[in-house]
Image 1 (cartoon, rainbow, N blue to C red):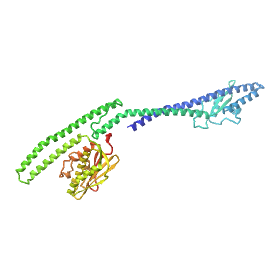
Image 2 (image 1 turned 90 degrees about the vertical axis):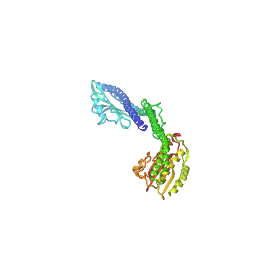
Image 3 (image 1 turned 30 degrees about the vertical axis):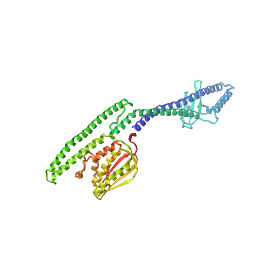
Length: 470
């Protein structure tokens, strides 16, 4: 969730900052250009006043008219030499009265021609188009009319290079970009803290829910941080977990009590059956069938009690040599396998460690190996292999029995479930359920798949590291 929420907040904050930064950058560029234009207008006004003195002298036929024109030319030359700005005073027919440098001409078209035309009409030229830092050849052209007795007799035109203007705009933009970057970093840090504050209860809640899903019914959430809504959710979750744990505890207690209470009447019933068998002829089929069903019922009650205890007990985890423990259980079951005519073979690593409850793991291996030997016909093989794969140690028991269909693989391990093809095989249908409960309590698992070309592969997995820091 953090990977989705944090980019969303960052994108929103970046959009806000850019929405503020772009107008600020445009405003800065416009302000810098306006300063230059105002300065050029002031210069043009001064040159226009000087030009009026020249026109006054020429109109009155004064002998100092030539000197005034020369003085004006020198002013323009010094101005152009000092600032690098081209400047000229042009008559209405585009001919130059004075100019610096001497070869400069008015542009035939474009913004410069439009500014000159506006000045001839008695108006200062409008603001030229905005100059941007990437326009390396852009020029700023400002035109101002020279008015004599109410008539426009000439136009003062300045053409300014934009190198310094573009440099100032770019410097301002870099400062704005640095400010936006700093603001973005602060916003990212704030978003990181916000998402951490919001999602911390969610992560805690997820861990607690996962713990309950994997059998740790005592997992709870400390409703001490985060938004009020998530704190209420944490309290509701704890209430739900308490109710679920109480219901499961009642269910386990009922199964254990029922199994325990039924054993005494069943034992008395079996004793009466044996006494009744003494009065019947030897080899009576009915009494043998009743005796077998009674023993089967006693086995079911024992398995129910074992299942209730397995689901209730907590695992005593320790670092265990899984290879050695598996070899021990294989050796214990080998005489039974030889009696059935089944080859029980050990493969894989002989020494690999994992975290498990040795008693619980031994019981689970016994149930799985017993199941494999029970369904494997004489002359076939059962292979028990140990391997380390990533974070788990796997003990795989592969038999060569009839196997199960895809539909039956989905149901194997359910309580009291047995395949319709195996109803005549001794068992209660609780052995694998007990094994799964024993393994789950220690962070392990039990899985099933088809063993090609026929048979079943049962994989017992235990973690290589201590689960949950245990």
